[in-house]
Image 1 (cartoon, helix red, strand yellow):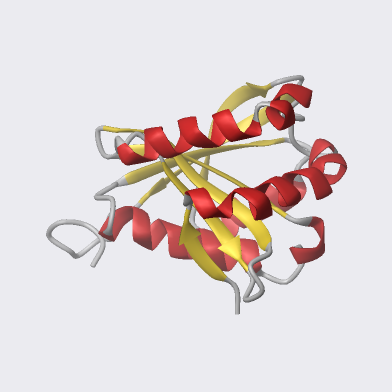
Image 2 (cartoon, rainbow, N blue to C red):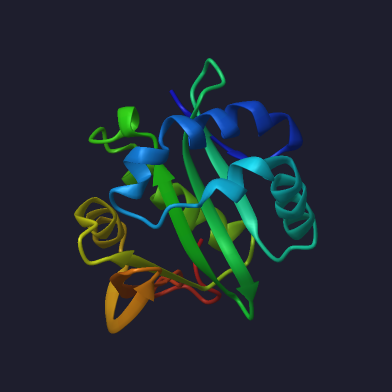
Length: 170
């Protein structure tokens, strides 16, 4: 079974391979990272780990038992009990329910480990897969249109507090 792991320096080779192998696939539904991302990968990873250590973001990888990265699940811009969720799955790992299960797990982590109460997300209007994952995991469209590079998208929100509990998710 794949495991959700917090981003670490030793993930670098597998993460870079994931991004390179899926670049064309990702560009079909989300904005391309550009060549500079790959050229400056080590510096970018160091910056991400610094942000994570400061508590500004929480980066996670869905890792197969053999160490291959199957997906990225990030909570960014953490502030005032909320964060933005972003995720991407390897093409070969799609259509198996892994993204839905992982987002659900990350919502629990966000509430219980990181003390978050609200998650926001956005997906391009033509990215049916991501919009489906968001809906299946309790995110509600806000009605807000957002610009995702050259694509038009829709904003989503999920309240992590459960009704009937004193302090939120338990």
